[in-house]
Amino acid sequence: MTKQQNHVVRELFDKVILPVYAPAQFIPVKGSGSRVWDQNGEEYIDFAGGIAVNALGHCHPHLVKALQEQSEKLWHVSNVFTNEPALKLAQRLVDNTFADRVFFANSGAEANEAALKLARHYAIENFNPYKTKIISFTHSFHGRTFFTVSVGGQAKYSDGFGPKPADIVHVPFNNLDAVKAVIDDHTCAVILEPVQGEGGLTSATPEFLVGVRQLCKQFNALLIFDEVQCGMGRTGSLFTYQQYGVIPDILTSAKALGGGFPISAMLTTEAIASVMYPGVHGTTYGGNPLACAVGCEAFDIINSSEVLNGIQIKRKLFIELLEKINQQFAIFSEYRGKGLLLGAQLTEPYQGRASEFLNMATEYKVMLLNAGSSVLRFTPSLVITEEEIIQGMERFAKAVAKIVINK
Ligand SMILES: *Cc1c(COP(=O)(O)O)cnc(C)c1O
Image 1: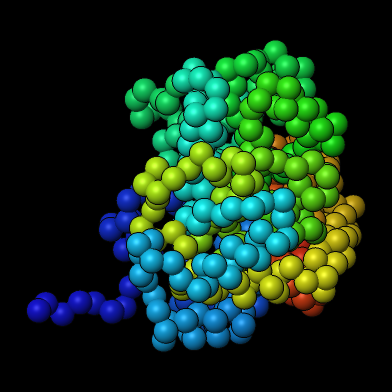
Image 2 (image 1 turned 90 degrees about the vertical axis):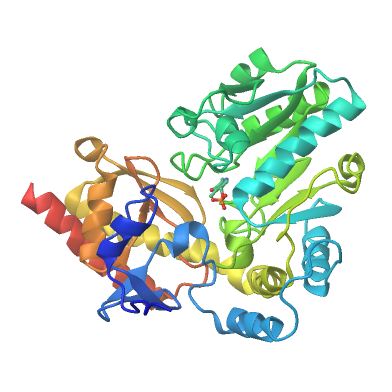
């Protein structure tokens, strides 16, 4: 056997990994709470949370314990058998939402793929084989499988791969007239994110959600809420639809669902689920015991008044500190999103320059994200401490000063 090199450096990425990402120049090796350390022992404050995934920070002791305990019991049995953690997590999701039935998968895209296939199948079984139109929205994001990326509202992600799945239309978000213009008896589903994550943190207006719900009912189309990013506590309630009081027919969850362990879920009602039968859809790893054991623990912690009630308080502190920076440097025109899915829209002189802020922030040892090229995105741990927020914002303020004063 040839001896493999154990020490790796960032340059290796550029040689051995498919070049679909452009990661930062350091390699994180350890995390705890909202702090991360790189190979050189440099410490970062994490306001990104793995793109809204690490909802309980890094290596939360309860999640570590759940993973360790399950890892000594049972890892994988396939879906030829069921398993205890999957049943426990499904029961929690059913007990706390509109849903009666759960399908587990491994990623947001797979949960949405299942949702879209279910909507098409339901319409074909119950109505006719031509009821296949899917209505989606510009700036939406639903994942990278070819079906979900084609349904997503950003052509730059779906172009260049040949013929796309048919019968998908995109209309402007929050524009009910635009939906009215395209919805008809051949529509099987409308899919939307109650708060658009990747697309710039636009929240649906209450009138829009109520209107779309009504139109779906009128035309026997299913309403799918993609809560992969905005769900599981992120906006201050377990799921965002609960704040609007508008109930979807299908809901997808991922990201925070596993607190950093890959898992996703598609939720629906008994009536809709009843068109499915063994063999019609499936996945090898979906609902595996390791992911579900971690998911159960994350669910119980997130779905507590302690965590959920803390979210608006933390949002307020974030905005207060951002506003302090803003008073000095006039870089933000608006705060967007809900809860700890927080966006800061850059003012005119800084439009298109979000990545500059991200890069400078990492120089000053704070991790954040963008949503498009003109919105900075903060999706920290839902249990980030006040001290971590204040310290991270001090670092961010220095990064902003560097950009603004150097120009
Ligand atoms: C991240 C995301 C997805 C895709 O999830 P993956 O786990 O990357 O497949 C889908 N929808 C929304 C709203 C997302 O934010």
